[in-house]
Image 1 (spheres, rainbow, N blue to C red):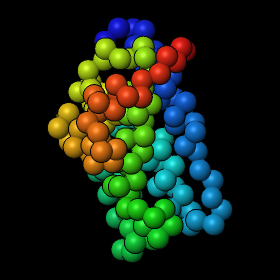
Image 2: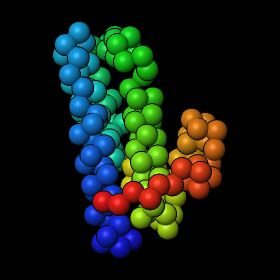
Image 3: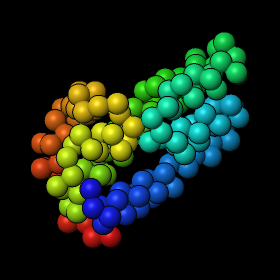
Length: 140
């Protein structure tokens, strides 16, 4: 990966994270805390174990409370958010030569197989085919 690609990736991730900021005063503080924690650490490979620790610290019904307000489990929220970030990276023309497997690792998936399966389930297309249909001539 070139320095140019690294810089573009860092900018896309930074912009993506800044757009994820949620301040919903109707949600309980602990739900907001976890949502914002996930958004801030979305590419962290250890995020699932961190979430588990946060859930265990709170209450036994915290997962249900999160699901009630966010409309998905914490794990699904992480996966959905990562896949949205993947779309941003895959659609950037300057990253068109970056292997899909590299993008999978960058956004926190453990491997290309898990990423490709989740991506195809969400979009009905394999990541490389989605990239071909959606690549943009974005210049940063």
